[in-house]
Image (cartoon, rainbow, N blue to C red):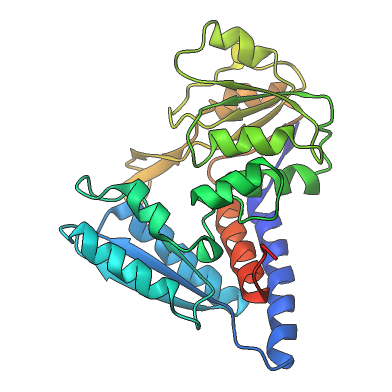
Length: 291
């Protein structure tokens, strides 16, 4: 069994990005600029945005944070998004999800200029990803693909089961795994899938993206499988200063001994999601990727 170290891989990629930024600056270009819009004071969102700001500093990006209280009117938020769309000094931006219930997330996503949508959530980017055109790919799936490549994990002809069908992870993950550069045979499973446990146990590559802590257990994993755990559910803990810890969708202790490769939580997919956002921002800073 080999642990897929997302932290170490992300560090290596950040060094590569910083080297590219240094070249850009020495050639007279400005620093790439990433902004984040944060609505409310959700603990998880605050933490994720703080990490993203630190990541920008590490690689030489400029970062900006736009804050709104959780009672902000949807139209006020949309107007700020339109303003950022028209800011020529800004290469890309994200709106941290989830948003308060009175705001329509899809309206927000579709208002973002696709050429600045470094989260890769806009339907234009999703559609271009589906048909294999250059696009900003959703950060978590993009990070997982990078892990598979950098760990030289064989994907061609392998049966990949993606458990979860969200627009942010499950669906784009299934598309990427089936593309010609990866060549896996993909099954998308979810909470209504019949005989889900047996289906998971047939996977050469099992990607768990349910958001259900501890759902994948040993009997659901084939000997020698590659297991990618996307789950990052915050659960209460008396063992940490924050009062919570992250728990994955996989029962790591019992599943890991059966695996050829496995990602831990934390330290697996999470850091790769963050660094993929940096990669997308660097692409945006280099010019319109659609041309």
